Image (cartoon, rainbow, N blue to C red; front, side, top):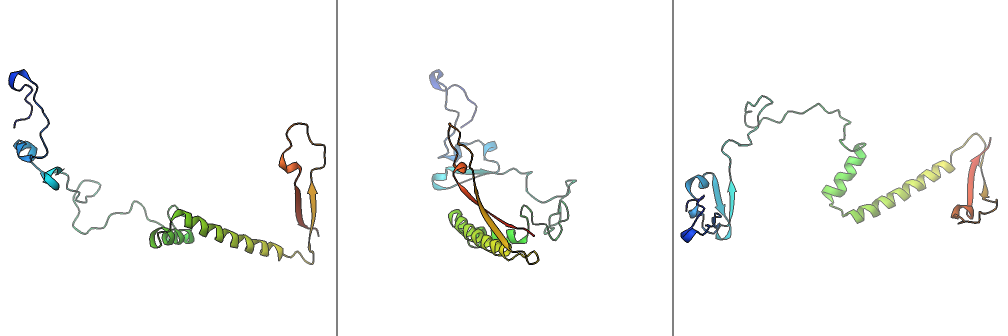
Length: 166
C-alpha cells in the first residue's frame, strides 16, 4: 500500500490510515526503526537512530561507559534536600520506602508522636525553676456586657493563665 493516495476507485476518498493489524502494508520508509509487538502485532515502538541516550558532557562529547554523572554542585554533609534534618529524612525514608505506610497510618503515628512531645514539653515547662519561685495560676473570662448581635464563644469561655512571678 502506498500512503498519500487521495482518491480510490470511482472517485471515493481512500482511507489513509493503514491498519495496525497488518504491518506489512507499510511502505519501507515507515518500517525503518520500528518494531511491532503484542497480540495481533497491534503495538509498535519507534526508535530514532541519532538519539541513543548515551551520556555526554556539556560540550556534547560522549563519556566512557561507566562514567558517573557530574554533580551540579557539591553538597555539604548536612544537606538533606527538602528535609530540615537527618531525622526528617530518616523518618520519611522509613514510612514511605521501607514500611510503605499509608497516609492515614502516618497521620496516626504523627498524632501519637506529637502528643508524646507535648507531654514532654509540659513536663519540661512544669519543672522549669526560677530560683525558688513556684508556678501560680488564675482564671480569667470576659465580663463586660455582651453585644446585642451574635456573641462569640470566647466571650463565654474561662481561660487558665499560668505564670511565675519573682
